[in-house]
Image (cartoon, rainbow, N blue to C red; front, side):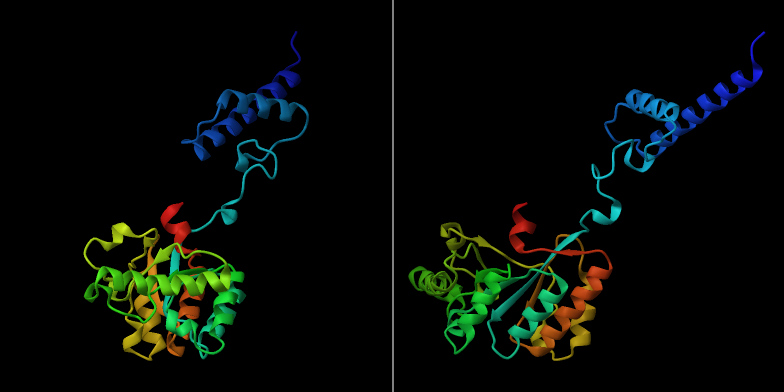
Length: 257
């Protein structure tokens, strides 16, 4: 005569294994997983008196990141018209405190001002991206091709002299090139998708409101580090968007990755 108590325990055990397997199917319906192996793994671990976490599909700790470990939606914050000795260092301090890397499109004439070479060096050493914004903030579309190239080449030479690296990205003032000149460059032209027109106001609240209500994943935010109100707004924008789960990256990661 069969031992009913043992049969009952086996039945309960198999029911628990089936329920665990069903949980895996419910939590991971779209993953390419060998469910037969998972079921066997669950059965084996149950027999041994241990159970692997269903949250990792039976993987050991460390083989899969948690939800909090995965990067959020990426955006890039960029700054034109610097460096500015009165405002850029405070911005760099704030970015460092927040662990944020930005992209700076710098003007050659500003680099040559007293103390500003050190700012470019700091940008580069702290992992920010330094791009070309011409030498004199000129409207390149109103110049000959030779003049436009010279505007870019002079700033390139200054950045290279300070950092030892080439500038791989360019943003011409007003977003304007001579016709078809963009195709001649060995640089990537970086535009923008969110422009709060921060240069038209000293009201940091307005700038913040315009940016945080418009920004979405993969956006490129345009600000200017030559205005104290823009620097204040930028750091507040970063705080708000980081709280919402956004990750700030340099434009190379956003455009090339």
